[in-house]
Image (cartoon, rainbow, N blue to C red; front, top):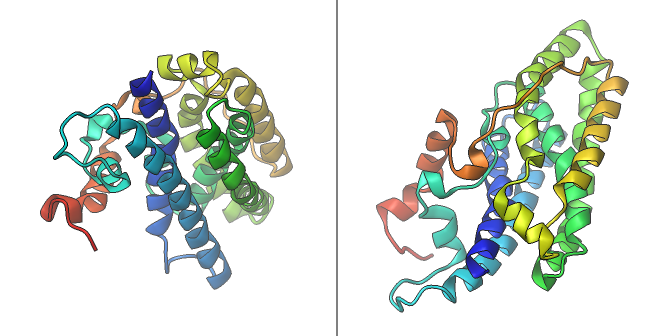
Length: 257
């Protein structure tokens, strides 16, 4: 049970961590000062959520590890796992190709993240429920921000429309993995701890459909989707992210500020 709970916390935390890192890469590179600050703040929001998940995960993992010399902390979970031990979806590790790609990736994740947290607010696990309650206000803002930008770019100039459509077309095959139920998620759902992804799925796709229509964008006709991230099988982009995230801990093991 503890191992399953630990893995579920990784499923929740890794998405926020990898996407938070992607947004952090944009600091100082936004199209305007206001947007730059907004994206940076969203990155900080996500990292705050990661800390909450990983602090709890460290408690759970610590109860399973008998080696007293091996300290389990939020930092060791974030920075010292091997690539195949990360459980983020492929969507969030996709690179910042241009602003339209950043917005499309963010919107797809936000449209999933909000109903997920709404479900987790009713979790039988008090700590997971508390994290969801604490995070939901931030994620409501994230979805409002990203969906408004999707509509602004999609229903804007010919150039912004074509770029937004290209981003949607490219990223759409990755969104199915967000609501694909893994054995861990199924078990946590049955225990009343995790979210029911079938309920999340319906809200998610309805939000995506509505916003794309308002943005005058076509919903791609795609059957099937790219997956593997939840199982630890990642794209080539993931290794480059970890080389940056893990550098200090790998170079100076067990370092502390």
